[in-house]
Image (tube, rainbow, N blue to C red; front, side):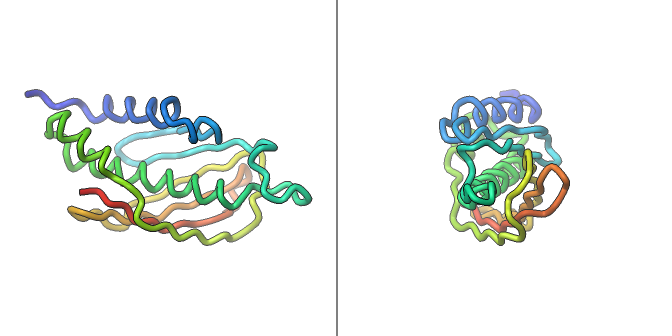
Length: 154
């Protein structure tokens, strides 16, 4: 059985993340770039995402969600990289079995900006668990928050 090129899998994952997940659609989460090297996630500021209306700042729960989402995508990218020769059935089973175990968010500055970008990297990918580190910056490249997350991957 021929394996599916990873670029095709990533294209399909982008569609799922942006179009099939109601919560992501509600928040307006978009993937600016997605490759075997990493991901850049974007969210535009809008009134529905404000946590402190007096100061017009992004809600902490939205920040946490974006960093958790980014970390999970990073973990999935690394799983896909490891399983490039696996069957579609095995890939789907592994990816759909993944989930968040723990998220720690450090809020560095208030979430002010027209839009926000999240990136990150893998700290460790084991057979059962992955750990990621993520960062959220605003449109002026000011660090807003960082996250460390753990995911079940096997």
